[in-house]
Image 1 (cartoon, rainbow, N blue to C red):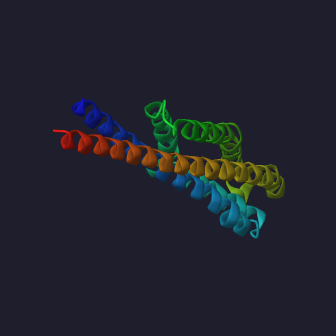
Image 2: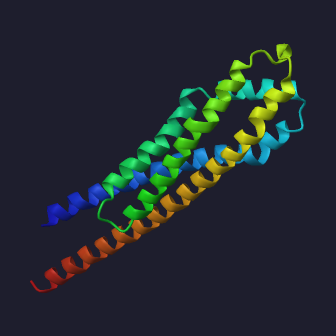
Image 3: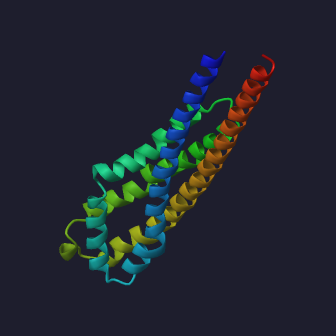
Length: 190
């Protein structure tokens, strides 16, 4: 019986580590979208059309790196793994809700933001674009609006994951207390 409880506690510890990784990677992604919404895009909005296009092309290209992809895909994978590990716990529904919110981020990113980034890249060298104002107009407001949606959804997801982490901690403490209480009671009866 004791071995089953130790194994279960170790499993909960593993679930806690995966959930913690989901919180961290989700926080990195939420912060990325947030800083674009609050600082990068408003700052770029002050630039002329050619500078705006050039900086966004360079920025989009720079994001194609393993560090960003580790966070972007890691948030999804760690959240999905957490949902699987936490089935039947009080934390499960919170993690599942976070997974749904982040899945929506994936849909927005792949369905809106990435295609807009690709169109901007396909516009070519900003110095050679005939009508940079038209290229920018087709990109900027739509990209920014959907990015705000990504920021809100990923922030919601991190809040849901944080709530799940709190619940998992409470569950673990109550299991440990129950175990210690029963162990103390059995030694007193000997």
